[in-house]
Length: 244
Image (cartoon, rainbow, N blue to C red; front, top):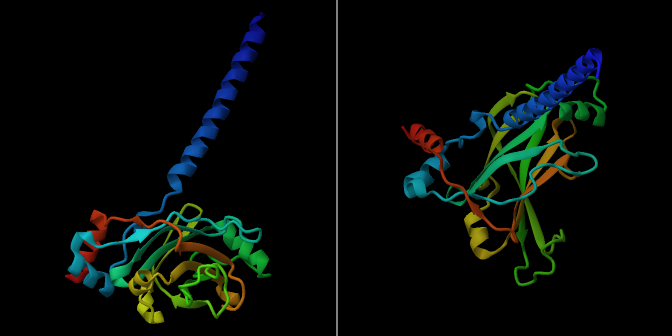
């Protein structure tokens, strides 16, 4: 093999190695940067949480379920994600983190014919939880339907507790006080009448709760297993600081 061919071979190998290294670096960056920022990982302390913590201490029961976390419909594929949430029966409360990236904002502009893309600093989406309640607990066959004679749907509005951004992602943490919707989640669970809890997301510029949501993700269904979530040290610190 001539010296020229050896040099060309070494250059090709070097370039190939650089391409592989670059791809790996990009993948690693995407993985490491895709996690929630620290502001989204700590529970939002409030009166209800404080009272429940005072009664239960570090054993305060919180849970979630292993549900689909990213929208996957044809019209909203990967638009929204619920990256973290907990249901806290003793506080009669749900806390959820909704994430969407900058491309979702661009899609929103296209989907609703907006003249410009909404700013990532704006609160572009209305987020609520929709609770499905079994009106005929002795009849299992109608639990998956939406007949008003068998299932009652109650919408609960939340409070925006925190906002943040990380790279191309935008985060919103919401607190849903079920007392505001005159619901008691412990009572519903104990009676076996809690069928499901959904997160509904609407564009604020076309808000119509009678219309199909822009995005929907299930947080709870009566057939899935509840997975306990332990209070972290940062959670405990935030709750105790709120009570001081």
